[in-house]
Image (cartoon, rainbow, N blue to C red; front, side, top):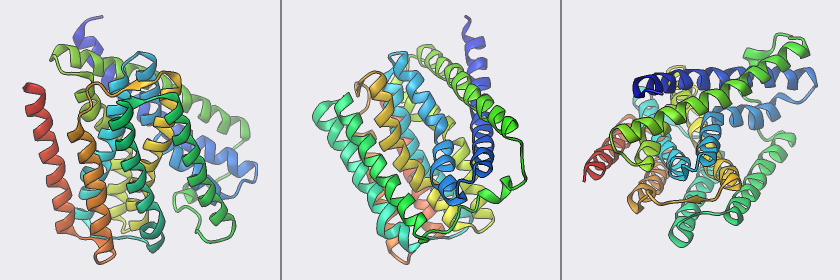
Length: 318
């Protein structure tokens, strides 16, 4: 297959990937409502899962192809992108008030799991099946706490659910889920193939492609969600979307992809991991001071992302 055709199909794959995730959310929510599952549980599980589904499917596809650097780079790059680019953009649009519960639990959890990933890479130089199982266990504990709190009435239902309140026959909802899953798998395969072709064309490592093109591409749904949420002054969605997605990326994606094939961090450097942990800790500090992320702080996050991209470009050309 020619290089231009591969790149074109990669772009088509990204579009299919995005629409596949959307269909999966809509169909899954309708099925859950038809079966009488509480909407808050839907918001905490299915909706949060589906917003990061592109990253999950891309990482698994990359692991199957033996491109472990793309799998790990996708997660590390996506978390940097989510925190610095997406949250920074949302904060520039409007100052973001951070919910107290998120300050007390979710954001500290994100910092801890980011440092845990840093430790795994430093000690094992990758993610093996044992580390993956530990990450999955932690993800189960994290989700279990959210579901328990929700059932006790400590959390409000997700604000994303009202869009799906109109009744829909179960077979139609199931068809949406199947089409969404097909779109995720097919789109991810096309996108990964295109990304690898681009890497070969410019003689750039898989790790750099995973840290940049793949991570930004699979983060487009989060970018759109947080930007729209900021414009609508829905701060909990804008911030929660980023924090929840980052936790899912580390605990679930890196808990699943290495089970397919252990991932070696050959092209992932200390600077990449430090950047991920650094912007996460910086975001936590901003949130604690004043219980909000102000416009100028959003600008600082954007500058951090720009500086990281500059480092990547110069390092790739070295």
